Image (cartoon, rainbow, N blue to C red; front, side, top):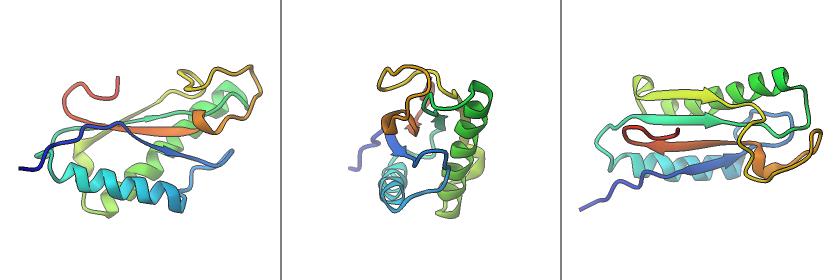
Amino acid sequence: VAVCNKGPYIVFFDWDKSDITPEAASILDSAITAYGSCNNVPIMLAGYADRSGKPTYNQGLSERRNTSVRGYLTSHGVTDGAISSQGFGENNNRVPTADGVRELQNRRVEITYGPGSGM
């Protein structure tokens, strides 16, 4: 019996970008395969940016990253209605940094499955 792996699946982004890289696509493909074992549970996308820009810009960037991931998921058969998302901008860093620091680990979208996931 297949088990639902709820994640998180984490995809990272180049600085000031929201494009899906080949590395991100590979992770998303794994997430999509795992989602097939989850019986159509809700999907939560949590987008983030590093601290190298203005907070308002980073908020928008984190939301654009969510939009890119949502587009990838839906283009590979995931129902758009199953997906919710929230952009956190430069908050909740994986790697604490000073303001203005570029940090790859903080430029990400985390994908989780199931009720209450992502928050």
